[in-house]
Amino acid sequence: MPVSTAIVWLKAASAILMIGFGLMFAIAAYPPTSGVADLFVDLLFWPLDGAQSLAAPETRIILAIGGGITAGWGVLVWQVATHLMPSNPAMARHILIRSLLTWFVIDSTCSWLAGAPVNIPANAGFLLMFIWPLLRMKSDYSEPFAISPAINPH
Image (cartoon, rainbow, N blue to C red):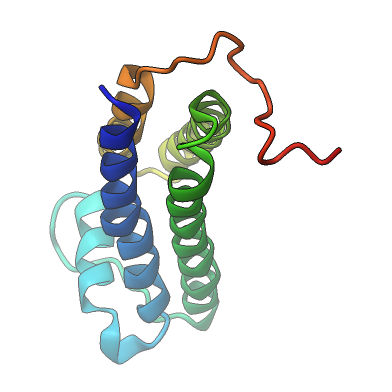
């Protein structure tokens, strides 16, 4: 896949998945706007029975923090795809793959420990949306993690 196609794919996935999910959780910190997040959490703790609640104040602050971090991560992916990937696709791939794998291992492990293993296949689908274009991207760089002159601090 050409680098330009990978960039479009990554920007779309970061806007829809990361920024979208981040905003969904962040606005759920305000109870009147938590309906979509309530449904999402209910799906993760199958069966769909409405037993889960995001109303506790300690839950709402974690939603605000986690939602903000997730949306910020989406902006970071967008910026790497926009500004680093065109000049140094190998470095961009290196940064993004390690970030995504770190998230996947921690989120999936802790989802299992929290009693929501159904989140693991959802995480795998999310990961695939990002990893697929990064692994399919063609690069003309022979050094996998070379620093491009555009970002060299010297």
